Image 1 (cartoon, helix red, strand yellow):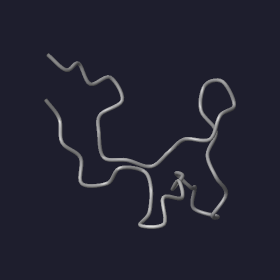
Image 2 (image 1 turned 90 degrees about the vertical axis):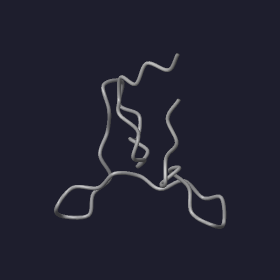
Image 3 (image 1 turned 30 degrees about the vertical axis):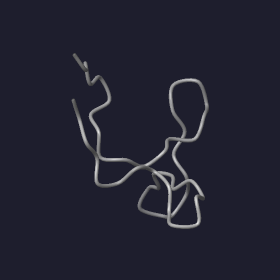
Length: 46
């Protein structure tokens, strides 16, 4: 089981997204915004 310290949301329940050096939000494989969290991308939970 994985427990994260950063859930991808702030204390107002607004989502936090990954940004590049210039402050622009990053897009993922399907042009969706990438949510910022501390869990591994391909985490396999048992």
